[in-house]
Picture 1 (cartoon, rainbow, N blue to C red):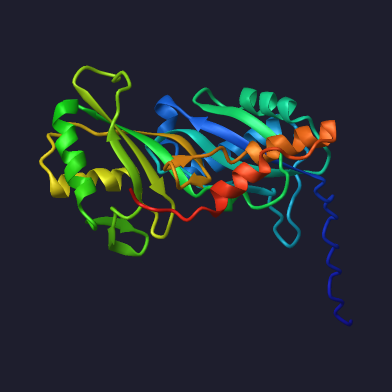
Picture 2: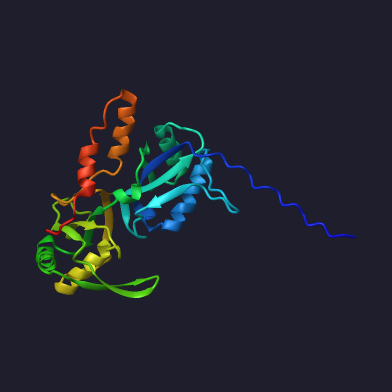
Length: 278
């Protein structure tokens, strides 16, 4: 009896993506300890609970078309995390925001959803603005440490990476560093405001703190609380961070009203500006 090879069933035909949405979300409270992989799993469950028609990739092992950009390190709170999701049927962005926010636990909060207007979201994330809270450190004590850090042209720090212990310069990425005037979460707590240019290797706010401890005596008695306030296009002239979704928001409004995108010139200036150190 001749052997007949089994006929493999053809792969299922996936519907094409007809809408791409960009999502801004926050990691707050205890959920700041959620790792990037944990959030991915939680978000994919939320997509299923919200019954969103997410598009899938083709191939032997299809995956939902969800891409993440510029994720904050585990343990850091953030008000400015971003992702993109592709849908096979169009949905109103505000309805998607409400459905996802309801499906996620408190502390993983969906702040805004907009329709993507083209271009690369990841390329817009050129810099981040952070707050570093230092419990037990008096702001008057922190000021000399900030000045000592800014006076250096290079400060080498070490961090364990996937490729082992790595040494790199944490000074060059710092575009702005100052002792903040915001109310502290606890008594005797210095607040540092820092703007970091994104690069390779990525310099994190805890690297900046390590660099400050290299050049100055700073009586840090407990773990620092890191909070990302913003990330987006860098406006080099002012050392500030622009809104990465503004161009998408304006394009949606322009389509609805038939007007020209009024934010395009402003955003393009921020995207193309060459970053400089203060």
